[in-house]
Image 1 (cartoon, rainbow, N blue to C red):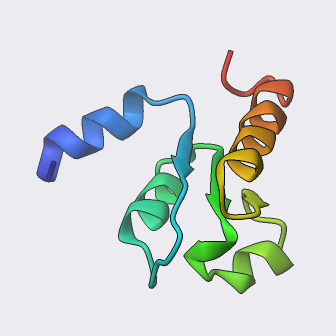
Image 2 (image 1 turned 180 degrees about the horizontal axis):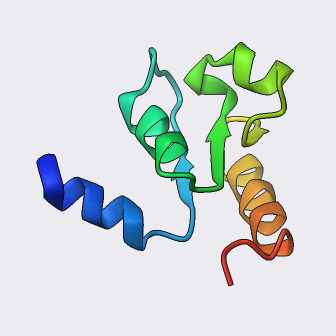
Length: 80
């Protein structure tokens, strides 16, 4: 997805999840942040600056970590 279509999807979104095992500087995560979406990302995204500044919800890589992050995101009430 590119261009206006991608922008429109981010505008419709209520949250963003990036359950990566290995990621560089993720443009998808940056785009979600720019769209103002609350987000969950795994430690595999290698974004220590976000974790240090409490940006988003960083969780351990794997199913259990992502499930915990999703529960936290839903409890925040931002996805209602």
